[in-house]
Image (cartoon, rainbow, N blue to C red; front, side):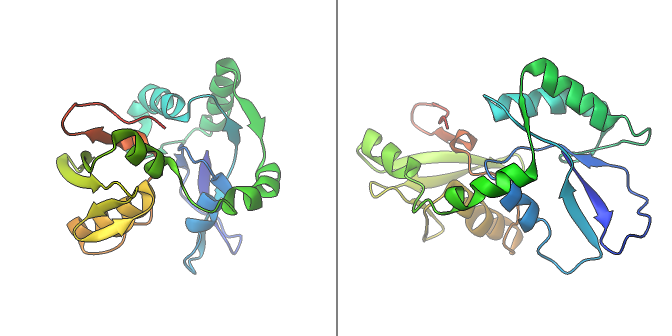
Length: 197
């Protein structure tokens, strides 16, 4: 869970909170603060869970009536943080902190490559057409036998790079700055199988 704040310490009249998922929350927080804006973003609470896709879906469904935009939810009565924490404790999640995650971050960032696509390419054994939905439209992307996603004559080595630098740029004309690195965003065209992370 995160929120906006004024980096100069002034009162900010936005109470909405963001509820999302990330394999590397500290890196995600940094990416949301890359611009030199007086409005920053900070993580309030972070938990480790067994299935972040499921937990995010559950929370978003429960809070749908408070949704303002995307992953942002109204918190006019300043109760969302305690409700979020109660849910996570009841779910059995493990609370952590950005300080703890910062200690782990170098290890996560030092990973040489994302091998999931290469592993899939080996499993399939042939070039495979995948479907990725964006704004209600199905887009085809090729997973080649070398483990790259090929879209619009460009190769991408992670689902997130494909999404931001490929699909979002193709549709909107500018690079995206969000998205996830989840394989579960893709369906195999021929079989209808949803990929798993």
